[in-house]
Length: 443
Ligand code: 3PG
Ligand code: MG
Image (cartoon, rainbow, N blue to C red; front, side, top):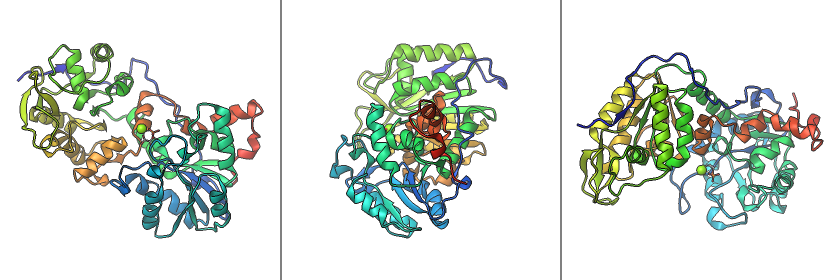
């Protein structure tokens, strides 16, 4: 079998000669344990952007993930105003993106009624919030029904943030999945209200800290899925941290194509030159970069498609790669068994089709078996793992953030975390835009 393995054999790396970007994590971030919430109205920004099939929630992981924060606030006698986005409506109300199914599910999980306001900051929201008592929960309608939420214009966002801030005495940021968005409810509201992080944000940042800054070795990063172009900067940054990078899914195909191998009709995404630069960087930095030696291919991406296994360096012109092959799965599982830290983002293949779920199942199984610190990153990867029957408890941490966890691993400072740490609050105060004393957390 042709081994498409790039670069050196394993060796110990306890030091990093290369510069690695590390996000300025909000260690100074206060959590809800540091603030008095009793009798206060608390605006909690969560990420309830769940996958929906019409109005049926197909994975409620993100709703479950915010329960610890919400139940703690309610138990301490706060009145809770929950807010989130859902999908990408165009800045105006759109029934297709109503949070109604999400409010209903949250009510079931909390075991208490969740009143959905018919608007975000309008009369419906104001009256629902005015009637709110300690222990009560109101959910605002989809924040992206208001163009101010996502506006690139700071003044427009700020005007919306002003109205959101009027609804509460305190702001809690717990929407980790949206922390990479410089949006009103994520970035601008904490500059206007006393603020603290929720438990999900604390857990997410602690887990990602362990895969970037407090790493136990060997450290393996497993990457798959499509959206390759989006993930190349992460590869580049993680080359300075990881001991091994294992690549499957459409991402592997892109690297194989970058090496000059034929990939048939496989899905290709991303710039081959950028992929080649990552391969060169891996070689220079002595990081083992593993591509699948074999692939499962078919003529098309359909349920009845006939599966064949081919060498990854010889995909026939009329076939497309839909999964890593059994040889690759065995190789990846062996590497993962030796790792002490693993971060995984992106399925190894089209796991929705049973014939092509083998690679993803093998990686999930290896992580589930492992005693390493294992982080499954990304809403889609988490949903894939759950769909294959793995419980969240099988991993050290299942991140609710796709883009957010990837940007964290890229070494970027996430606007939402920076805001909770108060960095931009200090800046806004220095510019005279806000009164810093007004946003200090009450003790
Ligand atoms: C996500 O699912 O990626 C987050 O909820 C953020 O949503 P967005 O990508 O539409 O900003
Ligand atoms: Mg996204």
